[in-house]
Length: 484
Ligand SMILES: Cc1cc2nc3c(=O)[nH]c(=O)nc-3n(C[C@H](O)[C@H](O)[C@H](O)COP(=O)(O)OP(=O)(O)OC[C@H]3O[C@@H](n4cnc5c(N)ncnc54)[C@H](O)[C@@H]3O)c2cc1C
Image (cartoon, rainbow, N blue to C red; front, top):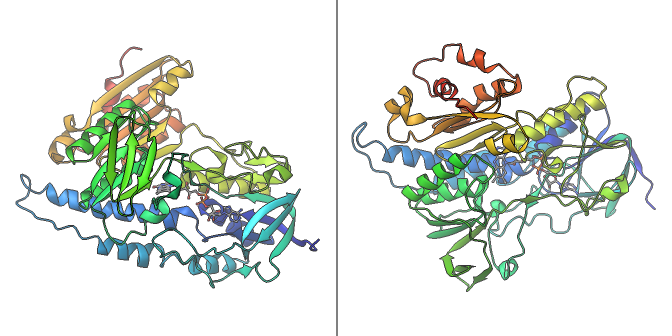
């Protein structure tokens, strides 16, 4: 048995939340051992939010340029993927090398250990070197910062740490691959591959019509790929209001993206050059296949049972201080409270305050914002109308269309969108809202404050909204609050 190395806190997983918590605790003077098996920074900067939003920025420029006729003259645009691929390499991911992030953490006094961490006893984490840990994705670009900063565990094969204060589980999620016949043997892409694409495929099948699938579908269509989205559920963006799904399906149709809803993929094959996806009576073919069917947290491999947690669960339940068990905190995607970078960072702040004994507010999930960065953007907060009704509230809703607002009318091309507010009529406060449209994610901010602070609807109605902003349409949605 290895002699355990003492430390104050072990943070397993250095995604946005783990990195923030580990850095803040180290800066506060604790001995922090951070364990990371891939890249310090996690999914968001290397495979998620940042590269995908760089793609979206570029794709939206193409769409905006195509909107010039009728408003500002004539335009032609020739999409070119190479600046996008280069920007992702040079500006976003440093060619998937985390040296800067690792150095930043070490500069705060933290101890970074490369390898895969497993909880092996209360307060104890065993770190094993990852076999072939540089192999990311199938496009062959995946240097995971090997040889960059950090203490390896490969010398002795493994190291054992005993935490005096506790363990923070921040291991995030990975792409969930559904058990579809034939899929496992094919060279499909996940988000970790598509962000490394150096060329736009001639055609792309996107399996999964959630936020990630929808964002990539629109990007690649705007860059010239023939895109087909396959969704098992009756609508795209099924977690959002039905009006959001209708809007995105209409926009996708107008942009030539083929959508199959109610269409679970039954079988997948690849003949060496093309994928075929069988959907009941229909088949769909394409050069590339992106699997975007959700995320999974691998709790069994993490050894959570050794910390008295359910290894078969899909996520780790926590209390308001993010405590999962005695001396164990969890944060980020792994808590199942919303797979967003802002959620992970928010929870990390609570963990830090709790470990440092600083008190403050506990976690509050009433006004969690989420944005699908399609064009139009779909922003939403709190409960949908369906969720509010299912919760037994007396619900009133108000809707308005962005093109009917002054700013929407001025904007003209690309003005599709709506604002929908969901009121708990019993308390006369908003419990949810959606803002779809140009800058829908930005307009959401006012609605988030209204939901979080439980601002009375009467107050929201009785204030001037700047003319002619997109957010002024909130006033129209409030005016349209109907009877339940
Ligand atoms: C394509 C895409 C686009 C996205 N866009 C957005 C967006 O626009 N806005 C937004 O808010 N969110 C977005 N997200 C979600 C966001 O990336 C995640 O919610 C966020 O990264 C979760 O952070 P986390 O701290 O939970 O951990 P993660 O980022 O998942 O990182 C966890 C880390 O733990 C490491 N790890 C796991 N197990 C172990 C172990 N046993 N030992 C050592 N290390 C381990 C992993 O290697 C990883 O580095 C997007 C995600 C994807 C895939």
